Length: 68
Image (cartoon, rainbow, N blue to C red; front, side, top):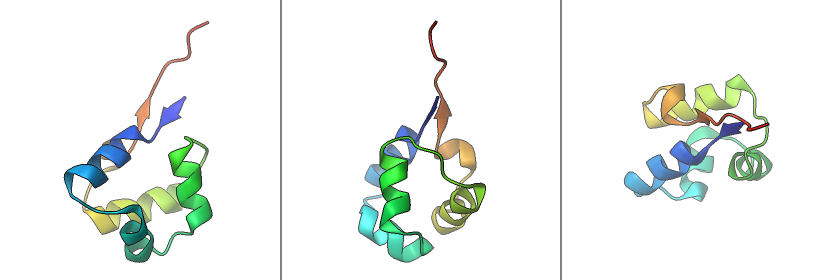
């Protein structure tokens, strides 16, 4: 499973509100909702966030192994 918790932490650390990120990147509120619930978002979205926050994809997401 992919988790976007690192993105949430990055926003908190940089004191950036989610609405501000929407304005900085031009992504939709529906896409932000997907990020909040760990749903699929395109690499284009990841690219926009990385460009806006001057970071790498690994700063935004992490892989969490699913236990069987």
